Length: 339
Ligand SMILES: Nc1ncnc2c1ncn2[C@@H]1O[C@H](COP(=O)(O)OP(=O)(O)O)[C@@H](O)[C@H]1O
Ligand code: SF4
Ligand SMILES: [Mg+2]
Image 1 (tube, rainbow, N blue to C red):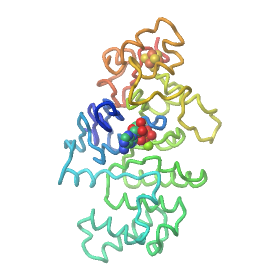
Image 2 (image 1 turned 90 degrees about the vertical axis):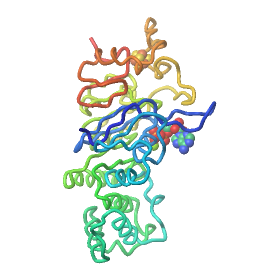
Image 3 (image 1 turned 180 degrees about the horizontal axis):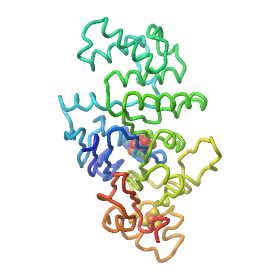
Image 4 (image 1 turned 180 degrees about the vertical axis):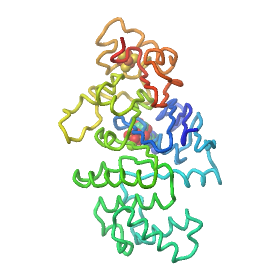
């Protein structure tokens, strides 16, 4: 049983003519103890998918299962079930912390909410010390207010607050994107260390491919709300199968140590009116605009063609949009490297 399973999940914003499907038919299995990256350009639906997992936005269809329990549309005790197991850390920690509370008060509150064993004040203070030490901050940091910290330090506080719940899964949404490059490395090191020490599972969202390469064993690539490739990271960097993944990798020269930002050539279409057939076809370097005769790309969405996608790619693929990363998956009629 996977720690987290998404089964054909869709999330919509708005209604009628203005409806936008931000996440479209995404299936993904996250095994305990693994780290999966979610990559894609800005607007591809990464944050929406994360918010749907923790029920910050409702799903329009599909099912979310956590530790074997269906938590789709969770209310009451099911929300508790989620918050006990899944916590999110965001790009801007200042926005998610109360500027009028000391860090110690914020952490003590998180401990009280989440750890029913830490009932007394002494217990809570001991746990606050433990949390600050876990993220390598001086325990005296508890007396300070958020605006007295640097960006990197306050991100450590946000990570400590997420850990107060004793989660099994941390969703990291662009957690280093707002930080200086030198500070990013320290936070990434800390996250890798915490994963080993606490046996955590990570779902790591980033448009910076070097972050994904550093933290994750495997990745899923999203384009206009759809999951287009699921792949071990080593293969993503050396031999991606989906032309969009290839374009993301090609967009920036890969100098050692340089940040690799996820952008592809061409303009992103209006997500309210995705192109017919394969959504990527207007930008695809090996699609029908570059190679006449590839009408299949105009006529059929590869996601609705799971039998063909599976057989083209080999491996135990479980369905369209499948992120069961053990078997590679690419939602493409003509995947790169296919015979
Ligand atoms: N609250 C919202 N209301 C309406 N549209 C939204 C909202 N949040 C995000 N979107 C739209 O949903 C799509 C996916 O956004 P998002 O999940 O933030 O993507 P990413 O995290 O990959 O940048 C985008 O087209 C974005 O404009
Ligand atoms: S299905 Fe066609 S247009 Fe879409 S990514 Fe594959 S080759 Fe390109
Ligand atoms: Mg985002």
